[in-house]
Image (cartoon, rainbow, N blue to C red; front, side, top):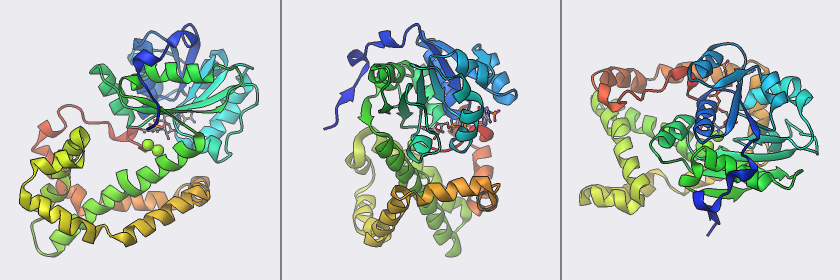
Length: 341
Ligand code: NDP
Ligand code: MG
Ligand code: MG
């Protein structure tokens, strides 16, 4: 069993009194900055002028340019999109770094794949929440938290572990549990999880189910309810008590269908392809292609995004959800700030 750290195991003294710069105010940034601030830490948001800047100010936080916030801070958390981090780090963060500062990430991508190479005299660690930023904020406000991983790449001060744990506690993650990892493990498992299961696997499964029913002549609205809407209820039951808890709640007929048909759909060949996906991640092939896609203005990304937004399941779903305002209960996330898992 991995060693778990909870609130009572963590002394925040090392981080108290330190100046923390949260760079970026998107999905993760707004949650980290607000949670740390409410946990009593000294936070400044570093962000370029624009929408995020205005929002951080409206939320009552101290806000500066990236360059200023980073130069003044002891602890610099980089919460920019992964593909922008290298350029912003080199131009606006690295010049102000001082020996003994801490450079922090929420995902190991840039350090692990050699895009950002920090100097040897700063701490480099990650605190990676295992959930979307909006949940990091929402659960904190509710007195709960999203679990997180921490990992140390470089411990120049000898305090990296204490700082990482204190940071995790400050964002509320130690209410749910914090586990130690490495940049390699966090990066590879995070990319695999979002590609094969959480985002890629799930969206592909939902669309395949929806299309199968619609192509067989069933009403798209019914296919939507079956393959997308109900998924939340099922996943909530798994989240609360595992697979057995979900199966306890469904009918025995559904459970029997789960046992006999689930493995027909997700069979050994799927696992073989999952292994291929994992290999591409481990060997850096995925990273290389994504970096290249960004350097060429995202031709494939943009084309796929457009086609996906026009998929029948989205069109039907938009209409049905208009009549169910309670499904997002005022918690609808602004579309422009929804990003990677
Ligand atoms: P977002 O895309 O949501 O946020 C990006 C923020 O960066 C925005 O505030 C944006 O401001 C700002 N920004 C973009 N470019 C620049 C720039 N050139 N200079 C200054 N600010 C800029 O990012 P995420 O929160 O999704 O991701 C941040 C990190 O967290 C990543 O490393 C990601 O892998 C990791 N992570 C994300 C998770 C998630 O839930 N999304 C989960 C776990 C980890 P503007 O409004 O001006 O564009
Ligand atoms: Mg993730
Ligand atoms: Mg991710």
